[in-house]
Amino acid sequence: GRSMAFLPKGYPYLIKLIGVFQTVQPVCVVQALLVALGLEISLRRGAELSWGIAAAVVGGLAVFTTLPWWVSSLMPDVFFGLAVLAAGTLAFGRGLGVGDRVALWILLGVSVVEHVAMPPPLLVLAVLLVIVEFWRRRRAPVTALGILAVAVAGFLSYPLLNAVTGNGF
Image 1 (cartoon, rainbow, N blue to C red):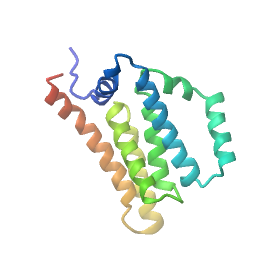
Image 2: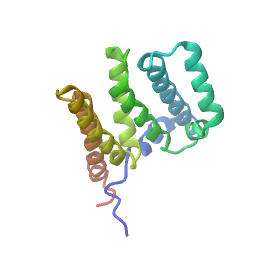
Image 3: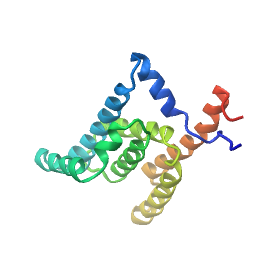
Image 4: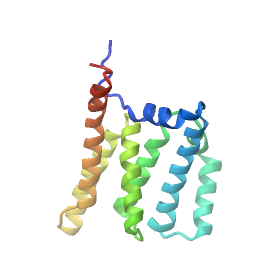
């Protein structure tokens, strides 16, 4: 059989933690709240959009994309988009406060642990950010290196969590 060592363990733990209510609907509510938080920080403070424009963007996402389906489904796929949103806002956001940055780093870390497909594209994004930032400013690209570290740590957490729980080895 196939080794389970590199499959993410975060999502089953999320379901188990929130599923103490004997239903999985609270998981979808938590997913929706995390996405709403990510969108609010990214649009309102990261991109410095007005409430009206931010509401129009969210409305467009709700009507013209599959975001509502991903948020309301019991699947970790919503975390892929959330990680990209958090990483992009951390890298390019203009009006972020310390609390916003902390929340985005937490969202990024949680997202990487939740979805197995997240570390490879995040690694590519981080490497590109390192190159661009160093080329543009000739200084250490701290945010890009942080994103790179989160991607690597997330990927390494899969076998660690699997070894601790006894799955896949």
